Image: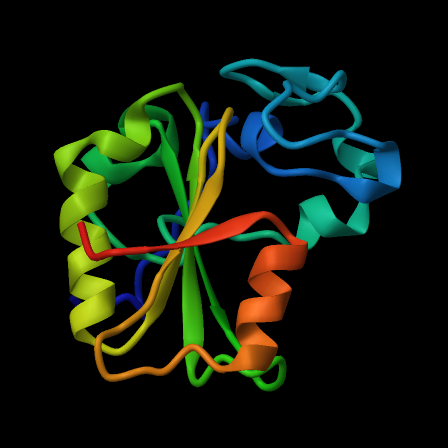
Length: 159
């Protein structure tokens, strides 16, 4: 899919306002932002934190179809290309919007696609342990393993 020419806006999607932490306003993971009008948008849009302004999920970048918008799939996909930190290439972060949504078929299909393309995948549930899936050709070094342990992230077998 060519994502370069797709222009998308959030519209009524406010999924990231729940799932992603915003340090500037002390908003934790998995809790609705106090400035979010659910299904409408940000109540402090003109003065919103830089991390909110800069965040663009993969759907906004053109990945997937209209039906894959985060408020519909109940997951947020965020690919980050890593230039340091020990992980080769990049990582696809999958953030849960509704409890249990990390177990849906779309998540499994997307996770397998990323792993088959040598992309590490991290799952962030609303509750419970975070996990990371490692492409079969990659090796978890001691340095990387220590980071996982320090951040309470379990290395998990492929889905």
